Length: 242
Image (cartoon, rainbow, N blue to C red; front, top):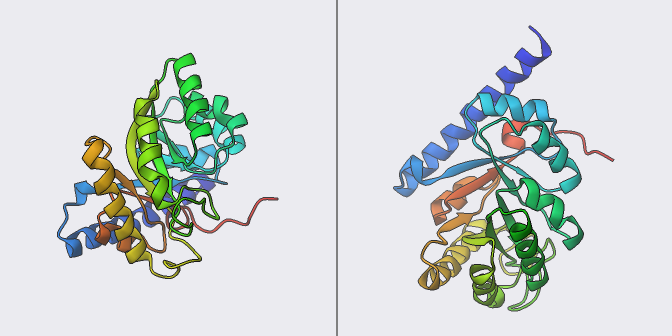
């Protein structure tokens, strides 16, 4: 067997396991499997893995660092993929990210909305945007891993909704490591769903809820997440680069 065949078999087996977990979580929550979209987080993994995943039916991939994502997206531009940017985004990277990302899941401040809007208009693309909610922040503060506190969500959502070139798609969170929700993933994701309900009252189409990763996708599905972001459970654990 070639390395490519081995890697394809490994990824296929991992994907099947994750698929079983999502299916079981949906069944337990009384939800349809089609209600939950799998996003495979391909950070630190090569374009060759993205190509294998596409061949195995994956349609959504995510990256968190522009310097890794930009060349990978270019190399895989012939594939039928939706690219999600999920990392903290500095405004000096906006021009690059806006050229390949279909959705940016880490919107957490006005300055970023302004920069992304300007760039999306310039390149004549519509960028889907998720407000990143920091459940470890105080009401209006910022989180340890980015994100806006719950109190700032609706105002920021309104800014995105009216910004040219941007489309408000919903909310995203990462289960917090500190604060009231530390170790309480299900409660954190249920809080996100409450915030999503409030946002949808003003913006009915913003119904995407991105929550849950390899370790807590079941809790996210139980809470009502529409998208789960899974990396290591599909791709394996890779030595950290640099």
